[in-house]
Length: 97
Figure: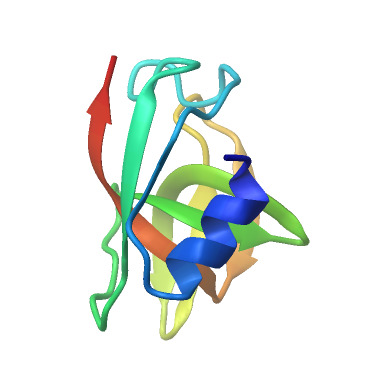
């Protein structure tokens, strides 16, 4: 399952598991690890939580770096910032090999 499909399915209320690839979350999530994301279901993510989100049209599994009302500042685990968004699909609840 690709990130866009995972985002859509999670946004629709489904818990999803998939294997994202890339190095931007190293130290927290290794490339290719199995990640499970649960829908928000009314929860508000806090700073430091990993979320499945969309920023400027791109879908990421990244961290909440800041909260401003109903907007979330999204960034990776190696210091990069993607920007502010309201488009969150779910929260990472498990990372496995």
